[in-house]
Image (cartoon, rainbow, N blue to C red):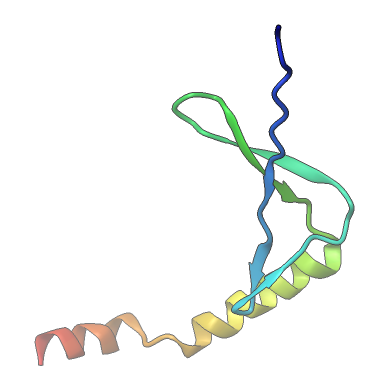
Length: 77
């Protein structure tokens, strides 16, 4: 007897502004293990609005980070 094995892939949400955000496009893309080529999961394709939100959140986060000079001063203190 040869039983079929069905494996449901995990869908990985986006991380935008410190929160998990599911995709809204309705489409997904594969996530592969680069060593084996095995598909491990799927990631939702982002809509234009989600992409804009992610870029804006990243810009805000970058503004909140200390400058390289500030970090160097802290390390040398």
